[in-house]
Length: 509
Image (cartoon, rainbow, N blue to C red):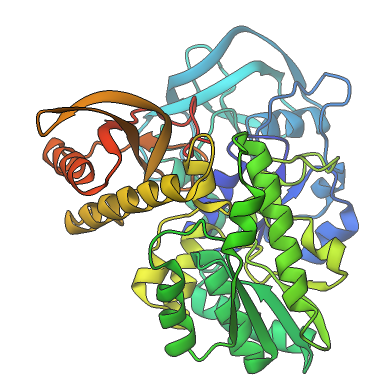
């Protein structure tokens, strides 16, 4: 395995993904990790991530310098390289010219990181500090016009540094540089597959849970479904799943889940109809954060009511993913950073005093999909687009009423039918309809109308950290608009959202 030390980089998850893409396991840990844990993890190599701090600033993040006594390869990226240089006796100073964006990298020493590459490479820089003096034993392996020391190496000790970011797509051959570090420097083997993960996880769950009962809230999404199936394969009918119908689901959501998991896979699922309770509590509530909190708190109440009916349950299953874990703690091991108020991380376990079973907590979304296929889930469920925990509540701007819910459900159904029919469902990350809190004038059947407006949102992304609006064909957009206006009563206008993330978010609330 490879250990990634997180110094606060916005790209630390990208580093992890690049490592995993090479079928090598890795973990991201905060800079505050102690040496005993590092030794217990027994990594084949360590990658020090970038970060926004300056090494000479007070309270800048630092990892225990004992890592340099472990006799394993270390790769420092951006701030990580500067930490390495500073820790080993070199000098870091404010740059005369800051470097952000594309830069032309001139390679001086090919092996091992730049082996088989051109002498001139386009790389992605993001730094205001630079190395001014190298520690003993280091040499310069690449330079740019503004940064003479852009890449360094101490081949004897297997220490390497890159001032630029090889993990981002903007750097040419960046993935090859990481691959060279993994295999040529660290001597890693390709052993990280979903088959091996599934076998190991099932065995771990068996050993941890034994013959005890696990309860789990099932949303119907990819994450909870895959986690539930993995636990089910370990303990069978001792897994008790609870599906809470909050009335904020899309058409046939419950029926499709029942068919996929209960009928085909013989899982133990209790379906709870709580639609009236949720809609009553949400009446006249338009603030998005209040909606989220009401839905989250009421879900816990409903879930608890049902969970208490299951005698002897000692464990709680959750579909928490690795990005949730990383985002829900600060980079430096400090206080929790709340990224999204409806994350799985936190809340329910403390209230119910159950031991957690989170079999997906070290997986990224794309890995979860591969695992689902490995376990036998249907492709429709595995490739289901992400759906927010609060459901359609955060896609209805303003008050939630039966009428407005019906309008949005019908519009969303039309949209998804056409996206699937066009063969684009798996090409876009998410595609959905939003009901806006405005009405506009229209003319339908020679009559003046004053009806609602639907916004269409479709984005492309790899991990939802960033997203771009999908360039859907104009003919498809025209067909979607025409069908919604003609088939959904109460809508006379359709607009298309062309905002990327950032500056916008994928969801509207």
